[in-house]
Image (cartoon, rainbow, N blue to C red; front, side, top):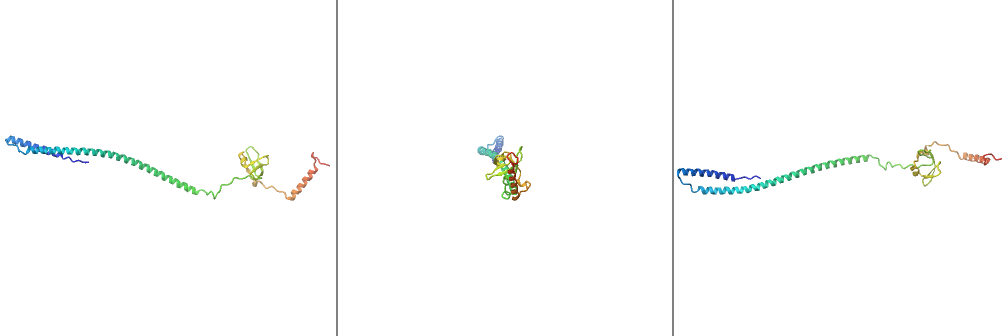
Length: 216
């Protein structure tokens, strides 16, 4: 706020008039002439006007100074708000960058997931169930042959007097060594050969006594 002070001009004019009055008084005194009757009343009126004008301008100066102080406070508050706005803007930009980075990562993961095989196309293989004729093994034990697998899933080995479910055997450390399908084919006897073999064994049994010697 700018205040134009006119009191200074009025005072300067008053001083100039006083100098004129002084010169006039000196001239009148030197020439023994009377003073002009309106000179001093005019000076008095001019002085009152200058004083009144100075008072008004002083009040305006006080108001202007208060307004300047308020403006300075407002300027300080505005500067603080601008700083806060700058901080908020920077934080917003950082959050925007993080959001864009997360969106890019999500897009990359989505693309990678799209490249994975479908579970329906490649189902998870079912655990192998031991079958009769399979060979299983365990650390520190000789391989054993599976001779029985009942309807409840109990597995019996040739060298064991008891059976257990397959998962119990696996808990004990037993695992598949070789499938029966991987074993070499063993020639099988025909029904006639089996009948002949049984007949020979029956004859041998009849001819052997309890002590292993032939009976008369």
